[in-house]
Amino acid sequence: MEKLKGGCYCGTVRYEITGRPEWAAHCHCRSCQLALGGGFVTWAKVAGKNFEVTKGTIKTVEKTPGIRRGFCGDCGTTLTYAAEGEVEGQDWSADAWFAAATLDDPSVVEPKSHVFVSHQQPWIKVADGLPVFQEF
Ligand SMILES: [Zn+2]
Ligand SMILES: [Zn+2]
Image (cartoon, rainbow, N blue to C red; front, side, top):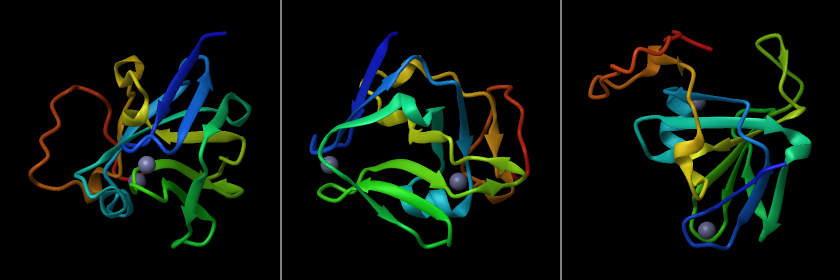
């Protein structure tokens, strides 16, 4: 299987995924805006067993109970998102979500939708024709 590599801005944390991302979406939620310091973030996912940290350690912050955001403790790059148990009726714990732009070649990611556009900033104009969801 194809391996794709990625990591944080400073290079302390590196990871590998096996295969292509199974899903990706742009998240406009306020929490992502704050965690990333950006207008929105593009999340991609693979099965949990297909995501491996190969260098360094991902630190986590859990502001919302059950939601752990992973980042590099040295440079602060947001790397991962993990939800315990069921969220919106889906079990997310088997998946590894990661920030798509942290892949060495983010162009392989194919986002499928925009989510939480109810939080979208007015200065973000979406014109890519993808489905938009008010929440998830
Ligand atoms: Zn770093
Ligand atoms: Zn979000």
